[in-house]
Amino acid sequence: GAHDAAWWLTRAVQVLLCMVFARNTAMGFNRWADRRIDAENPRTAGREIPAGVIPARHALRFVAVNALLFIAAASTINLLTALLSPVALFIILFYSYCKRFTALAHLVLGLSLGIAPVGAFIAAAGHVVFDGHVVVEPFILALLVTTWCGGFDIIYALQDAEFDRRHGLHSIPACFSARSALGVSCGLHAVSIAALGWFMTYCPGSVWLWLGAGVFTGLLVLEHLLVTPVRQRNIGIAFGTLNGLASLSLAAGVIVDLLK
Image (cartoon, rainbow, N blue to C red; front, side, top):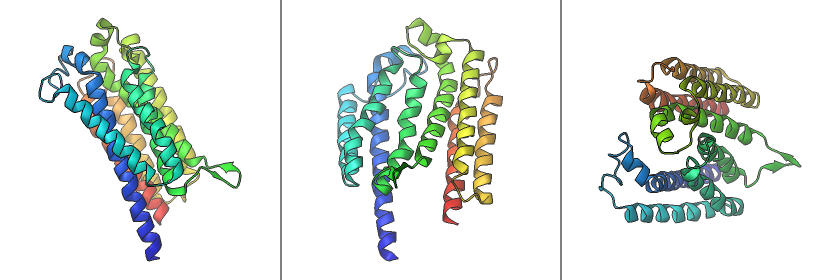
């Protein structure tokens, strides 16, 4: 009825606001934390903080405001989202320092995005346990997103492998050869596709779901065809364009499948 529609619309707006504020916090903090590293890297020296366009203190103020807005928005949803909002903030802020001490930073980035499906489910349902059983679907999606994003972040990090080695920064491409790094990325994406197949067993399974999943899988394969150990000029297309299309295709397929 109209009441249910209003509830879902309100909840969707609340979740959307949390997403925007969390992303602003994460991106702003990452730029602030990496400002000195970015200044030394020719690829990133033109970014706003190292270039002097935005003062570092203003960026930190932006981060603080968005972090508070994120907690406030999460607190309007339910008690569990309110209690977990600082945990989510810790994960997304912790990522910015990971490359200083671990090559697993890619997976921490993946986790910071992978917790989103679980957070959205908790926002809608208020908990993850029904009739004494944990609802596994949001956690399967978390596995999918974590490995998918970790995998394409390895591809992105190929651009800075030499710089990272010289400056003592850690990443899969900096620690291993390009071929090995792409092998790890490919392995993570294989897990993503397997997780997608697992998740699909919980869905109605219309042709729209299969279409969305097929396009998603095809685009991940295309990433690895475009970026090879000896051909890395397509990293921008593989990292940005293809993953953007992959996320839209999969989301559209799942949403239409669940609504039909």
